[in-house]
Length: 157
Ligand code: ADP
Image 1 (cartoon, protein in one colour):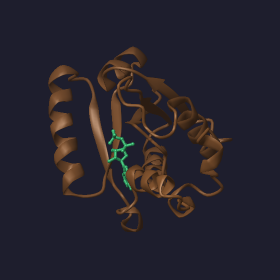
Image 2: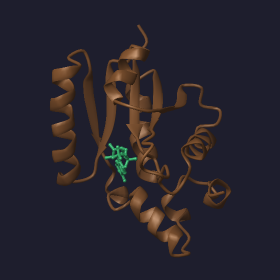
Image 3: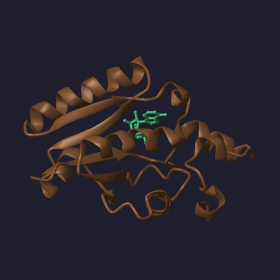
């Protein structure tokens, strides 16, 4: 049976930290579905459809990665797609506390789903979408924190 994991997040935008998590996921699973959670009341910096395009550019040629937009609960998306694993990344104890609470809630509602969390490589611990958004808003260049070759300006219109 094919092993598929859902890697859910806001990915506003997708960073080198996310890429490190996804790459580890690809070592463990046959296929990865990157799910961009869309919250109608939260606009974000990069439009959701453009976030998807950026991630598709990062994984161009990698047929094991699929990018989808979704609304509502992550567990419901897993059920619709018969996905049994959720992949998440851990940078620090704040991430850990949050992920543990989410996992506990999910385990009660969706007992068939297992959450797998991977540690971020130390060089990416300080990388976050928020940092990248702040840099962009202040007119800085976030290229160092983004996957190689990504020109964020392309995705900001
Ligand atoms: P969310 O809003 O669901 O936290 P994010 O897009 O911020 O969505 O993050 C998606 C996942 O990637 C989360 O599990 C988060 O902890 C992880 N992540 C974000 N940045 C990093 C990083 N630099 N290193 C490792 N994991 C990260």
